[in-house]
View 1: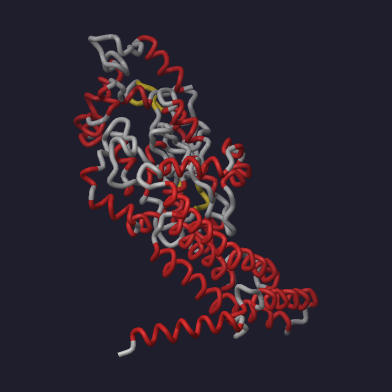
View 2: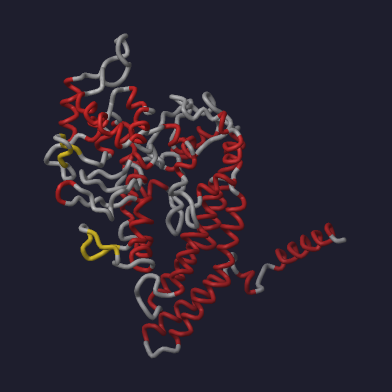
Length: 482
């Protein structure tokens, strides 16, 4: 509905073409009377907002407060503000009036679907395990977890609840989560990356912007990037990055380093900008077992289901060859795929099989009610993801010490012992079903631990391999002995 208001305004003040010498190339001929009314107050009451807008390209195009915030009376979040019907939230649908291509791409991405975390294991942690119902608001009269409100929802996005009079429930707004579910039914928040009211492209290109959400124990991309040569080069050469350049094509407008945006979104000599961050990713490393991105897109009903991973890899390789030769790029992907295969085959697939057998043996059925739940969750959700993401971005310390080392340590010293203990307890019960389940679990543990990947821990390493390791160890000691 908001579209009708602004379209009417723009018809009265049509966009002008580049050939019109006396006006701007793109935008409105002049600031609208409605926006001028907004300015009179806001430049006094909210000087920072007014100044941010003044620094923006919107200002240069005479696109102001009213053009973005105008609403119809029938809009869920509309309210009367000094005789103007407006809404606080400017949704992707609103931005799409002027930026249709960007919004279409964004709406087809995993970013826009971030709010669908509601009901996931992560949300169970925040709402139940970590939280309670102590935060009571008009939209949540029975209470909601402050851990979810202040944590998960601020990155993934909340489902914004509208109160009478157009006010927004305080548990759900302020919120600029990337997958925010808006009152108009749209998903996403453009200002998650293009922070209002300047909406700067340069800011969106800076890795710190992505770091608001992509950091921490389960997805430390910001820390990984800073450790990598890419990040080191960026911070050493930030003055050469030309971040505020209009076209910002890697290899043309800058060459010192890539940012997150360079690799996943920005233009190359052969590709335009994309706001679907999955179009250059050839592995989805979010699940327990890494899968190809078109598989996860299909599950979510996204248009990317029709774009095979090989095409996406070619898209990313096109970015890489702006700075590296093809041999370098091809060899990198051999290394990366090798790490994904190691994780999937040695830890994820057998680990999941063991956990599926262990779940019925727990004394309580609720998620995270037993130690085994936390151990397995952190194995794939923390250590496993760290290793995978770090390998994708070439951060060796995170791949090894924060990744595969922690993964192996906790698999052998925490997970397998806890599984054995759980099976032993079940064997001593009077529950026939649990006893049978325990036998199956013990058989699977035995199968996994006697496999090629794990039999070393039972002192069953192949004699030839053991001799090779002993020789290497002796050479090492001899090399560094005093």
